[in-house]
Length: 173
Image 1 (cartoon, rainbow, N blue to C red):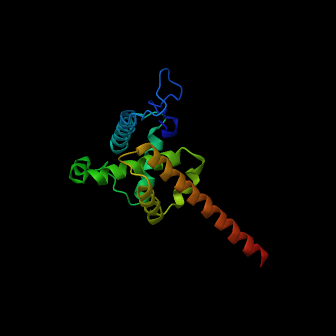
Image 2: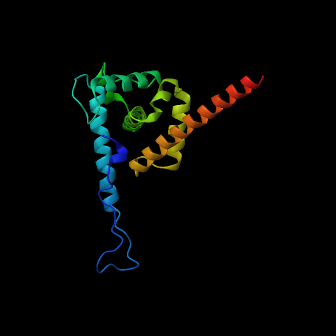
Image 3: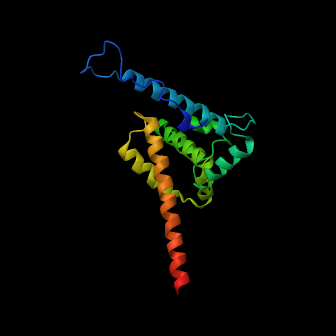
């Protein structure tokens, strides 16, 4: 299941019959869409931390293990060994972890997969915290995840350009 494939289920129609030109949009559909995305995050997180071999959308067992390995590389706690510990972790931290797991999954199934092996914990958390500064993940999870993932992708592209420039300078010597 890919976050980018989600349709916003409650998009507002721009041309409604009998619509008033200055009418204020109803905020409830956005809240329902956000709750839907949070539910998907919860299901995905439970899938990742459980040790059974079920599939979640297109994610196979090998993909699940690769995503968990990346999270271990980022020194994110792996709850698969002791799922009871998760009840002791504050809810905000668990929510942040769910968002991070989802972002790693999205990158894993994208062309940016090659950069996951080189990603550093500090850089990943910096991008996460900057994204939280600009978009509240509780209020608009969809936009937060898009912003966070895009910032990671831009960081990867910047790193790639820096490496290419360093090689150019080395070859000119």
